[in-house]
Amino acid sequence: MAATKYDHDPRLDLVIERIIDVPRELVWKAWTTPEHLMKWFTPAPWMTVACEIDLRPGGLFYTVMRSPEGTDHPNTGCYLEVVENEKLVWTDALEGGYRPSEKPSDCLVSFFFTAIIMLEPHKDGTKYTVIALHGNEEGRKKHEEMGFHEGWGTTLDQMVAYVKTL
Amino acid sequence: MAATKYDHDPRLDLVIERIIDVPRELVWKAWTTPEHLMKWFTPAPWMTVACEIDLRPGGLFYTVMRSPEGTDHPNTGCYLEVVENEKLVWTDALEGGYRPSEKPSDCLVSFFFTAIIMLEPHKDGTKYTVIALHGNEEGRKKHEEMGFHEGWGTTLDQMVAYVKTL
Image (cartoon, rainbow over all chains, first blue to last red):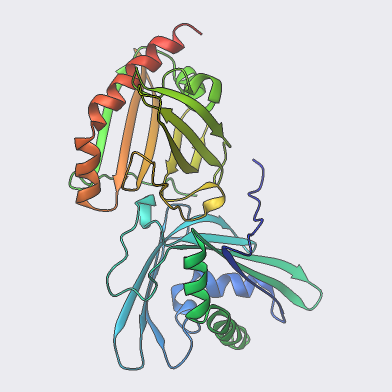
């Protein structure tokens, strides 16, 4: 089966590309194990206080983020592609079992997005690429304004620091 | 990888289960080939006047239905699981490439749903199951009220009659 192409559209999508000095097997572990993910997934002083991962296409990806004030914000998503150490795709437009999603009213994110994480071997460690796909320009703008680049950048730094301790 | 379970929730989901007297290989062909799909997909006197099928997870499923008055209604979806002769899953909550969907204003369906088509061998032909998953009760009700059972039943009759001519 041909691999899905991920041409992105700058009008609709956001991209982060970084070389990180850790092996991709550890990055995969950090993304796919609740115990590890909870250590780095949310920019401090926010915390990830719950995580469920059913790692297969159609499986649930659930997290709860707690604000510094102690308010909890659940996020529900569905895995779409799971290729060990290479590619992880999920969307919050679906829940577990591919059911169309309703945004809970206390969710932080008012638009839907699909996240594609790609890991490629690199001489200095791993080439790490995130693409966030949105349904329209408004979704892309909102995601940008809520600090996509800073947030995903900070948590990536947290992840790299954390997996080095493993 | 474990198979996705399709437990359905009568509050949220709609199900059709029928034994049809045609082999599942023909049903698969009818569902996955634009030329064939256009022959049966829409209850007459409606017509399917365009169809694009990119048959892989993440691939586009696009159709245009024409009303008896000549108005065209596009439908855009994304394949999620493609298991030849066995299972076809797609959703209109996503477009091709897993991008979250925007409903076009001229789309007939005002809610999102995920369709699961399952084909099992049966002594009389094929056990044919459709499950339509909705994000909430309102979606299920709207789909029911717009004639889910009659519509999918009629098109299934059309499909069976058509594939017998192949």
